[in-house]
Image (tube, rainbow, N blue to C red; front, side, top):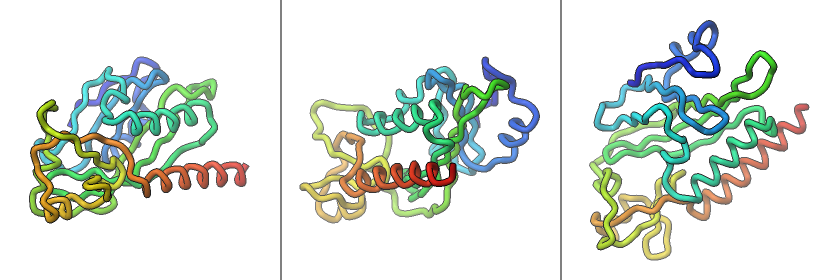
Length: 208
């Protein structure tokens, strides 16, 4: 778990401090420049599976795949400009030995003038179970000598021979471990993210 720090644009105290201390899951806060200002992991994951980013890093630099970065950049922009009051989505965060489905919630932080000065990003596991180790998902160094296989950043399926399949099915069909992974979205998840985003915006308009 990273040590909580005070943000340059406000102190973590009072209600916010109580919220952060009592909330389960992975929490990080970014400022208006998308710079990571706070991070804590209140899950029970081991150090081997823990994600421990550096404070001061641009949050987009921690993501893989231009398609994924563009998607989150759009969400952040709409939160900072108040086109969305908050945002929720379901995403897979699998590890080599664990299948994990997360609820992701993003909530703007206001200053005393009600201007958005940051976003709290919370990731809560809603489904998690172990499985035989999938070496395909282990960290690795990119190599020009290995082929690229695209993996969906939302559902964790891989594109093998023009079909989006699970990593287990990938092995059953003879897929190799010695590959580079390219992150993006599968066709189904592209449709789902567009649909969820538009439905969420519509619900916001109806509740105004």
